Image (cartoon, rainbow, N blue to C red; front, side):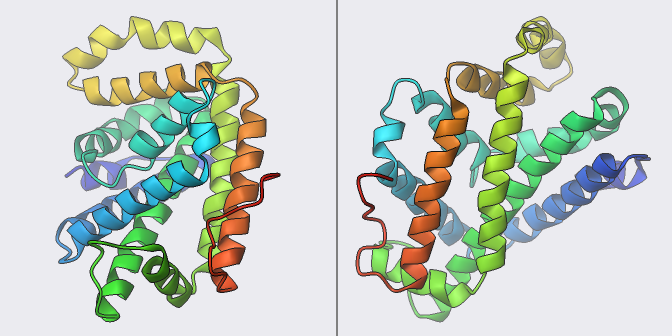
Length: 249
């Protein structure tokens, strides 16, 4: 909807160029996915993976210090559907973002966009592989998922996905420790709603609030990454129970 606005916006830094490129790629992917015959199956793959992540990391997910942060990760950052308006609004305000936001914050936004693009692209590819194998994402189980995962041969992209989780998580944690950001979000709620940006403002405020409540985010990220790396290794090795991890992970 706002692709022309993205294209027409002048950018002058490496981070702004990267964000513009990724927003254009994500815009085009969203259009492609919206008309894809396996769109609903991709959403089912995403839902299955969200539940798998909750089960694998249930000790962290139930921990009062981490629950809201992980819930935000799975329902807002990793959002297979229902975020079209938010994403359109990001495209709409991009000219103002590159004009007013610090360059390092543009880099963080770029990381979040790339993470979302990679995750949703991988979900859609898994849905396509399942269809090629004669299976539906409805009733997906561990065995079918792992077979499709191995068939995708996207190890480098999945490694990049994990790296982005670490990078963006650490950067977001650094930003939310700045109390000025919380004050600005509180002060701009009204203007955002008047500008029809209430959904985008709500997304940013939920992210700020959830990360603000967490302590030692670095430990959480380290634990998540070490476990997900083991899961990846188990799947690729054909382990019979790839999501069962030792207690020390």
